[in-house]
Length: 166
Image 1 (cartoon, rainbow, N blue to C red):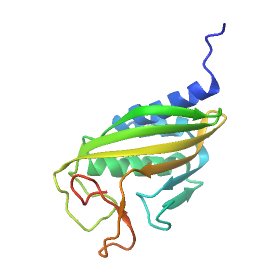
Image 2 (cartoon, one colour; image 1 turned 30 degrees about the vertical axis):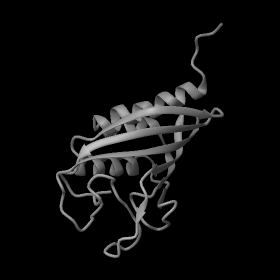
Image 3 (cartoon, one colour; image 1 turned 90 degrees about the vertical axis):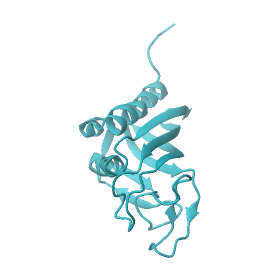
């Protein structure tokens, strides 16, 4: 019996590295190793082109990942993401359930409100599609419900605790 890791296990480990090294520790350069140079990101938190899919950042590779992580770490300097569960869908898709906690101490996404100082807890998931060991496409999904706040250009995602930050 072989003890070699399966492609699905290797892909799960890549997502774990993303959370541990890039997001939690802020080692942004590691994103270059994890993402394809032309990766596509779907992130409803970073734009409002489509309230269900968010802005699609296509072909930006790891540079967009770094921008997103830097934005999160600026707004929540003590951010901590934790993986609750991971499931492989075939050998090239990984579904990851995660939680994030942090204190809202900085600006987030150019939103028109000041940091609240509130400790927040957000639940979400990601779906990562892999090719040749790199994340080629990723969907980020926040479990909170969109808030149709007329002060914003489009739907925003509202943190359950401070009701403003995300």
